[in-house]
Image 1 (cartoon, chains in turn purple, green):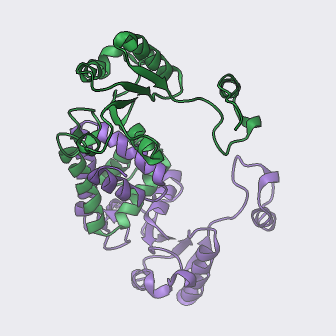
Image 2 (cartoon, chains in turn yellow, red):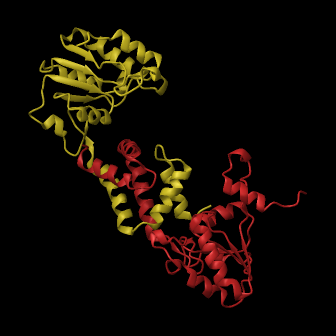
Image 3 (cartoon, each protein chain N blue to C red):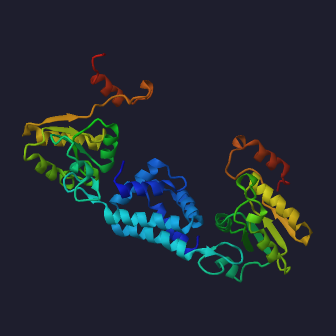
Length: 198
Length: 198
């Protein structure tokens, strides 16, 4: 329907997650009218990301160097390791400023439906990191959903006899949320995980 | 918060219309994991659009050549001219297959608040097109909002004495809509523009 390359752009944009046909069209029209240097900057940033971003050789966090900022930082506690599914989980936990240890990014969660088993995740690399005994605490920070729970359970069993302190993130009501709108599983977890009032 | 170039990408994506910070982050993570050729293709399409797309020298429609497909098409009626605000309006009208004439893209609508007056639109070019007398009918297809109506009224006055048939698109209830949910202006227009039942 559109002139060749405009349609190409709409098609390319429509492949991005969360960008439907209407949004793709709106973005394409915006870019058609945008200044050439702005569009060039976006295009070059895309290429830069693919050229420069790699994964940390220790923790598989996103990095522009062989090792990521967190693995390189000598102030981080080398005894505590937080296991997450994805890079964005690292960023989310870093934002809380609660954790001073290091990370291990699995690259996903166990999901038989999607054909992802333990071998597709960086679990072998995790066990290698544990082999020198420097790490004494593991925090399993996988997503609180079916796949994340399955992954955490699998890892707990795998590491059970290594003499580590293994913990999971607390489940419960989200802060600022309404009790009445919480789903029953969350509310049930909040009950079973109740703490002494201070 | 993110590694340099990842944050750059999130920032660039966040400047696109309708892409909030969360979407920008989601798209950036998707691109981080996408195959390099896919990302390269998106980047190159962006550059291609800026390099190849220009505006038709006759009607200011988007075109990859000096004149657009519609202006070049000898089967299009040279006596009817549909005046629209933007390129996407051409596409919307083409999709209806109701109109066999040619277009004139104004490049926007009169909007004093945004500093857009008649001089910022391609009105002089429109009058030039009318000068040889080949065009005998003008359809004003500006948006049915304040700016579009103001533009249509301005153009109607401007062309009043040129001996043209000047029409506007019909206002009324959208097909498939619910009468009870129509706003009062639309419903009022539907009343005042009522036609004999067939």
